[in-house]
Length: 102
Image 1 (cartoon, rainbow, N blue to C red):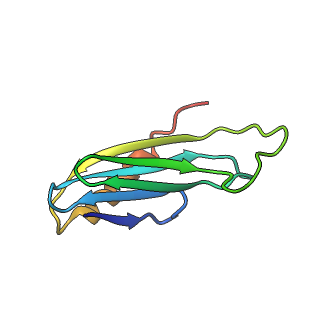
Image 2 (cartoon, helix red, strand yellow):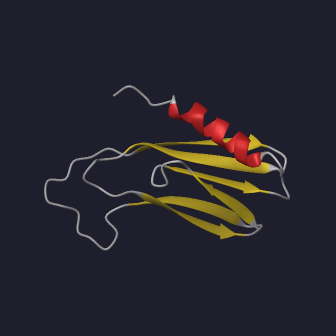
């Protein structure tokens, strides 16, 4: 069963780690329009696949004339069960500095 750690800003950062595998990932939303919500949805089919989606305009109609950019980055890491949270937070800090020039 994967373990989740919500980031300091829950709508822009998410961490997940598999205690039994020692593997984890960090997802960071570098940019999203200020007038659009954005949140994550994880789907975990154990042993088959794991999906992460950015959800926006949930149960809403995209406003006429909407113009916006979403930019995300994902990184992976290996860590022991006892230190995965600290490793995930460090990896997230690294990813935050990867924002591409517009």
